[in-house]
Length: 523
Image 1 (cartoon, rainbow, N blue to C red):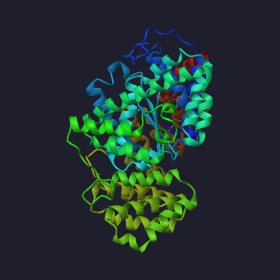
Image 2: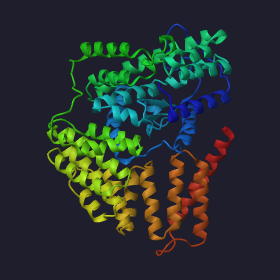
Image 3: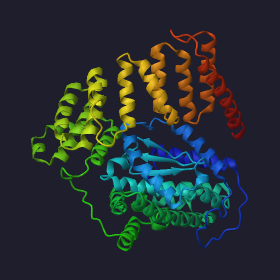
Image 4: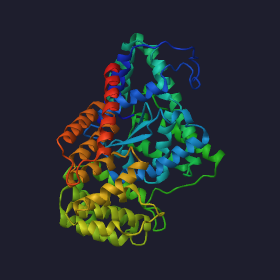
């Protein structure tokens, strides 16, 4: 992998936790082949989840973490069918459900990368979302990372590493980091694995390559089961090859923890030939009958990953180019979507409004693209203080199905809070959270709505729920105790005391106190 910022922090945290844990006795395992599930794996699913929780607790506070509402809705539209397919195939076993969070974190990192963490957490770089030009391409990466979790590759890899001393493990990490930078750092990579560590590191890298092949093979089957084109795997490998990742970074093959991208492309292409007819998907500009949404989301990811005004100005230039009118409507929509969002980043509201008007016209004939344009328009209207316009855009019929999406629900809640309808927001979102208690974004809006109503107790309690969801029970406990103090001071707002809410706060404080004590003992 090309490891930068967000991913480097993941690796550093995982290494520190692993070294602090010390060696664990290993069961018998063969060095000649990848062990089966459970063979030589001494890290229990519960312990694996706690390890993941301890890592993501830091990542939620990382400046690169981006809980973008619209991008997450898009990613979830791919992720949920994959997860369901893994369950149907028996890859995601029932006993794994409680042990895995099945959560995805977006990072602003511009590198084309993704990673799996212990406990069912996954990281997705905006660089990867920006590079993927179809649903199947991005879904292929998610299927691959999902398989790392269902096959417990991290736990099995840690069990393998326990056979090495801590210094050998350190040399392994340094070697992989150096190799990830390509040929320029080949000497550093060689230096990291010389001497007595070389054989152990080579064995570990081979082990990792076997796991990558297994993730490709099973992920390919999950992708097909979920209804995505299997060609997405091949197309995405072509993207990775062009991006200059670790797998094609110019280093020696034996330094790579992943198989060569060309090898993986050939393997996936051969599986398509055996298991299904080849579906040649074009990565060129789609025609109006095709799905524009992946390309609009690609533009969104590129803009959000590139905050530099000079980079964003490229979108403005493309939008003003007289030749844009001769491009297919889909390409015009992509450019205008990117220009609208880029103008919002630099607070050039006239330019943003102008580009959005042109975007909306281009999307009228494509319901799915029009929905994405409406959401962007609602964001823009809220940014310029036009709440009525935001609510008008959000009130239009849904493009697909009858149930409102998370984006529509939460954007509508934001607009209603600003329009003074906070009581309605509280009622709507409490119903929403009854079915989705792990929605931190909804809890954040509930906190804002209660604050607008003057109910400080409920507002602070909602803040505590957010901290709990971000795996920080100590911070959550602090918020719950603050809510208890506010309740004693009578900070309930105009409606007076809510004894049910007070009881919930007391109960959550006791639960979080126990979790905080357990976390302190584990540290």
